[in-house]
Image (cartoon, rainbow, N blue to C red; front, top):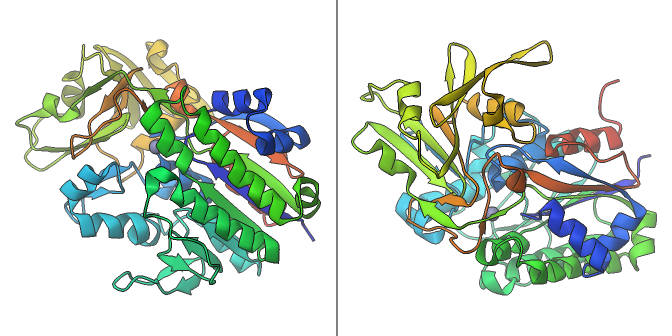
Length: 437
Ligand SMILES: [Zn+2]
């Protein structure tokens, strides 16, 4: 019988910040795990934004398969913008009630492709008990009724805890969302986590901590070390619930990673300005943007991309043409197509000098919910969201750039760490001997 497994996901934790915290002793719980495990830097997906990344972690696929394209995107069938929570201003602009429903229920229930299987579904099908805390997408095989009236029921893991909207068991955890900046979300997660570990109430636990990303957005990734101390304490309290760090590792194997990195924001820009007067929808947030052509738009993809030539905020503009992908920056182009397990590329390769750049860009572009144009911001730049909000002076992520894309990946007891966050789901399935072959 495989050992039980705990997946810890620290939102927005860069590989640099993880390594520094472990080396300086500022994060003793993370250091303890690192000491007993195998560590490497891994790569995120593109756009490197939480809904896209967590969908890749849960399903082992790139966005072309799981179909979650961005933090904010245009739903062609429903002819409306889906906004998962770029900022309060952005969700108010997109429609408050609609956005909350999109972010809490519909992303997992309706937007995540029916063609992919989550690890939670796979484990429950095998008779195992997965448990998730605040992780989205959470799609599983057990139907849960919401605690809050008016929120529809959700299919999730056997044990399912989600910001006090859903609690499969009464744990006595404090309210999650009342005072976000004061760290109440992770305090809730930690209370639920302790309850679950104390009872050994799962085979696979996903312990998702998001307050660090929140702090790093506000302060910038180089100034968020203080917030990591709080995150470390939440990991320590999980270990303590098993009777201490050694006792924890006697009972559980561990995977610890983040979903994406972050980079410092110096300047912000409004992506839609370049497309004024055209029949297009522009969805931009953090360091990624999409442009969707509507019926009345008579410009082709290349012409739309060329409107961004010379703009210092643009790292690269991507579009598809005749079965290939094209990356464009300042009028220079790289055309690339998958071929024989690798890539056939033609043009200026320097344009796509990003970690695993071609595969990640292809995975973003081939998503049927993506815009015709997918834009990655240049270093130091961020795109204002629907509400005009940004993180100037702080941190952001979403682009193909190294700073947004590299994450810490640590495994303890189980298989070696995967090279990409898309390797987490296969690792979990393989750990529980659920992969064929
Ligand atoms: Zn973030």
